[in-house]
Length: 194
Image: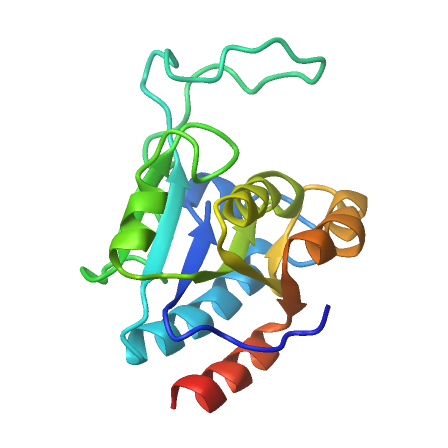
């Protein structure tokens, strides 16, 4: 579905743009491109007094808060380097931003994200981040289930796997919301929010 509108109270929700993730090998875009496009969006949202939510994934030092389920995929246990969960400096340092720490793929389960959005009257979210098929898609699914209008900034997200990214864009996102490029979202934001 083509991008049609942005609600009066739309928030930018940024998934896992943190030190230990943005440098990973990603496709189709490098993490640095995703960060740069997200910064453009965040600056535009802040200029219009619209909420910016910076979501980071983090775990306790003993990993006791890691989801316990058995999976066939190898888990990335062990220690993390100091500062791996710190929001990238290009996005950090804005006291008006909301910071949410998650311990799962999606940003809604086990966090106060829904409360933070609803208290600000938010009815729509624009999503960016890494990885498209994991944190971004999980958050988009939950946002849709919570009744939010969902917009996905297709060139401000990337994945660890090119095919997984394409699958989310082609098959999943059209069922959850509307998609658009960073420039299309910025143009619509200027048109609808001055």
